[in-house]
Figure (spheres, one colour):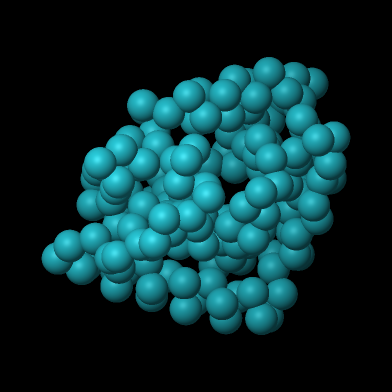
Length: 169
């Protein structure tokens, strides 16, 4: 059950904070465009088709975050299509570890799986990352409360963003 005093912040919101604050604002204000993106569809197929032997898939925490799978050693795994936005991926997985820590589940580690590249990135929730997440949570709340979306400059990643048409047309 979600703490009523805690804002509804998903792992996706933390991810978007590190990618684009404008995208985050749209998402937090329920203007979701992921359903129109072929990149999101490809990511969903990748998620469904990889690691079929893992039995415990998609752990839901407080209805806010969905962990792709937890392996037999208790390591959290998050499946991503590519490492282009690895910082956002790392902080999203750290957020999952942070939420678990708040519930008394400590000493967990995470791994980001990039199956298309046959690569993994190990993730730990350090004291510094925990502080950064606390600041990030505040920032997500502040951005979501803005009356209009924040300004954004066009970036290379805008070409593949599901919000491209909304932002730049």
